[in-house]
Image 1 (cartoon, rainbow, N blue to C red):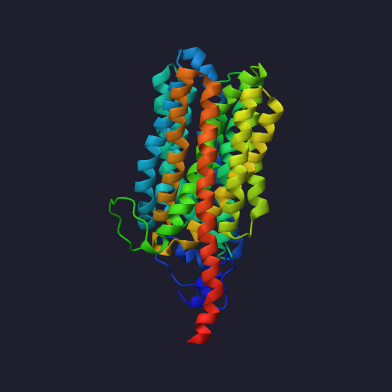
Image 2 (image 1 turned 60 degrees about the horizontal axis):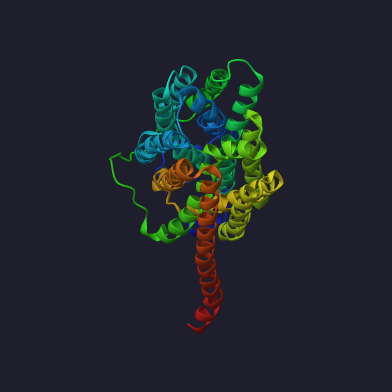
Length: 436
């Protein structure tokens, strides 16, 4: 790739149109020459597919308390159901990312959409705890195949070639789906008939246009051969991946807590059993996350992380205090501040990785990044669920918040030190050039 195009891509600027776009080896690289209106339609239709797939995987959030009462299990089982989802999702990510680089996005995304619909159907028909595990495994396989692949497709489909904009749309669609799912399910479960069925029926209907959008993606044009391989990050971007991945791990550990146990936490603090109330806390956090990402658009990736991590830590401290003081107002403040920090940290991390990923390994690298994210979603919350069973939910959430806040500060210090070194190297570079 010519240097001016490479520099433009890393700054997030539109690529110049006065040259014929080069084929990157990506399955959909030939889209660069597509007419702009058609490219825009495909881009936003693909974003819709990502939004709806993530919406479906988070519909169970406000329903877990009802499942506990109906099937007679503990908070630990809730977190294990969530962990089963992550355990299916991660291998799916590792296979589907490089597979879609080889066979094309459409060939991977259509089966993923079918699995998502099947997972919603199993939830709607659930007659026991085993059904919940099976449904979550199906949803994990679906999202694992779709998340990295759709993120890569959005980068390739962005009409002007602006990777920064593609990263923003990916993160907002992801976080939007995470928030829309619990709110939609809470609203329908509280105020509509068939609370354990209707949310999943609506999701199946919404998946139909997503499938239509995916069929509009171009067929594979890559000659890359797929082969199973362990996750491997190109050497040139390992430092970026390590720091951004750690920051995003922490950001999504907080998301995992909100998606599994915070609705019950809200019920405990408020004394209300309204399903929409607990869902609203999740929705508020993710709304603040999405708004923060929109506000942070165009900012440097490292700057976003340096602002996001302290806000995330502050939100976690307030979350712990809210439980100790039984204060709903503190809980709302913690939700808004933590959500803002989560959004900035996630956008910064994804932007940094998205810009550094080589074109022929794009979906592969992004899938590895999503592995880190979903480990953050799934692993810490199992420990919180175990502690909640032993010591109570309020104590478990407080312990999680304290540990996660400390880790945010540690990662912040590492990032700040690296940022200072990079700034010093950049400022000394002209002097070195002049001396030579």
